[in-house]
Image 1 (cartoon, one colour):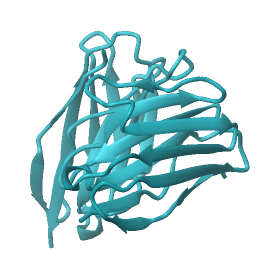
Image 2 (spheres, chains in turn red, cyan):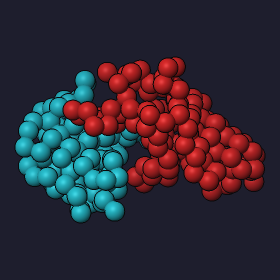
Image 3 (cartoon, chains in turn yellow, red):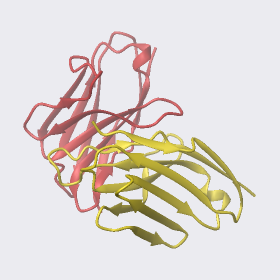
Image 4 (cartoon, chains in turn blue, red):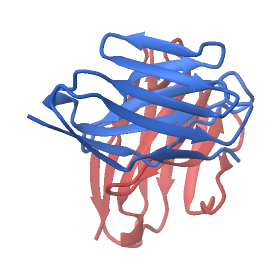
Length: 114
Length: 114
């Protein structure tokens, strides 16, 4: 079945620096790659997503890149702010497939130091 | 936008009793509902996938007789944890698929078994 590996598990940056989180997936049929931010005890919040027909997508300070050949996708946060501190999860699915199971990576705890 | 209402938000039960968690999709029909479990400082682990009107498909290692899932309508799915034990204490969260937003998460249920 699908497996998603996420690195690093923890990331500490200074305010204003960039943060990069990387994920790899195993199922070549995966075509949808969302990124979520989760506060403690809350539901995951979708921050950006990308589909397999696109190589890069940007939304203000957040960008996601996808390399289908290597089965890698990454989250880039520029000009980090203390409020960006949270746990971030990548995920992958075959959206539109029979089940479309959304499988999550292990998570990255991002700390942005003021 | 699409909303999934999940209840209860938290529940404490005695060991050996059963607990039912409900997820209702509002403003859209959730043809598929995914159920996840999240232990502290860990990722969301997919437990099962349910499609309206059919039996749920459980992930490897998840006991189907312990975690009963019912998806009798396009707007309601339930998870019943039977004969709960302290090791079942976790954060349970559902995600409905069928809305324009892709995957819509409930707010989660914190289950504590004492």
